[in-house]
Image 1: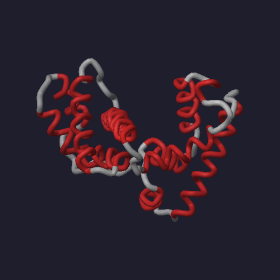
Image 2 (image 1 turned 30 degrees about the horizontal axis):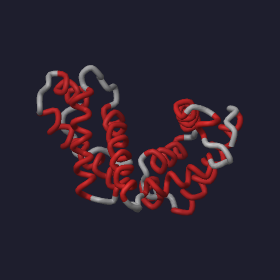
Image 3 (image 1 turned 90 degrees about the vertical axis):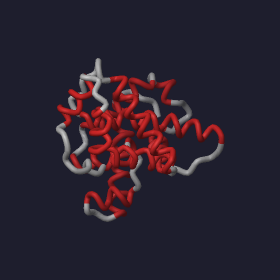
Image 4 (image 1 turned 90 degrees about the horizontal axis):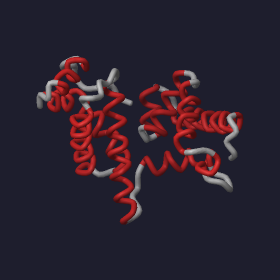
Length: 194
């Protein structure tokens, strides 16, 4: 979860450019957040060209969403769009062949928490499950929340998370185990059958 590139226009000013339908909004978004967005897509897809196309699709998504949306936190708004675009691209590619990806690894790790004789959909609607998982993540201490979001939302490699937090890789793995254990207990307390 690297910080954005060099400071340019403020996020509020960039959003205002979108509202005015000024194409400079795209250039300023790319200047400030292009590397962050491309990095997210690359971790999902492991292909530079696909990552660049996803970045451009994200800009189109932002252009189409603003207005009427007026995001309060522009990087969160953009990463949400990027994540959806990259996951859709990943699904398209996976339907054709097996694609190596940090997304595959991180989702396999998380699915172990949810694995049972039932699918999450038979226990709760997917939206409700997402709400519960978000609630659990919000209740985590700051470092664990950072690890959770980095690994399971942004699909960052464990080594990257360790480097960003200046902790060892084994420590990140221990934290992930504790997070998954806590998530399982949280879901069970909320009547999700596992």
